[in-house]
Image 1 (spheres, rainbow, N blue to C red):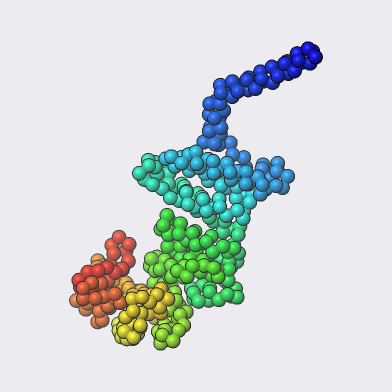
Image 2 (spheres, helix red, strand yellow):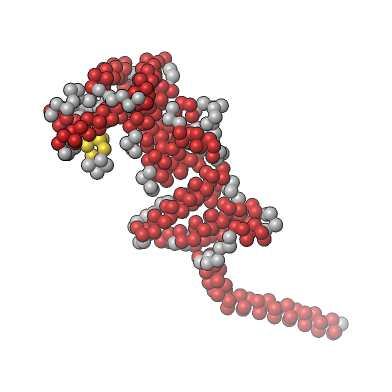
Length: 382
């Protein structure tokens, strides 16, 4: 009996000693372990290549990508202050998407965090942000390449008759697995890189997806206009107007179709716009606007009205006409006219184009913008 008590006491003492040793060791080394853990999260100095990971992962790519994704989330959270997570974020997200190309969150997080900044607490954003913007763009282009139909994308880029892109069973339909992929890429090109041509292309690609937001169609035409490609912008706005079919928009739709047909022929044959043509368009446009029921009802959804897009097309037509006349003015006088009023007073034009937004209280003038080297519009007395 006494022997059993001694053995039990020895076992209990040994267990208590081990537990005590572990507790003491834990308290002593806890801070050091935390420092090591934080250092690993904050400074992933070694990020292996996807080739090495694939070779060592026995084809469990998705599981490994999930593991690295969790590490990336930790890395972002522990480096949130001063946006320090940007230092290695692209390398981590690029590795994850190499392992699992269909994993959408890394692309989205990359676009959201890399392409945005806050100058109040990112002291070096001026010198580094351009690099981060390019990294966000690379991730998004990678997503396009891996999850979209490249042949359809190339076809869409060359198509400017927008309604053709929206036909559900057309050769352009659903080029991407998710309409948000080209949609946010268009946003990056527009907001971060000011590349309106690329933005227009990817808004068009977005609009070809059946689940795309309808305003992507509008943005494609607007971005084309911002790049001063008047002819394509005019035809795109007219195609938007033509695509709307209701009893209220029939007359506008028919006129837009006819106008688009004429201008497409003219553009192909390099026929110049003239003041008689512009005056005829304005008379017809104004009559349609006066008839248009949305102009009298503020509650109507203007985004779906034919006259709205016809108006924008007419604005681009007016600007295209003035830019052409201004070239002759510059040849004669060695300077730009700077306003439609100057061209009219110097008898370079016989018709004074009126913008559709012109009112007595807020007159809107066409003028030459010396910063962009193109004609634009602004609220100003003639």
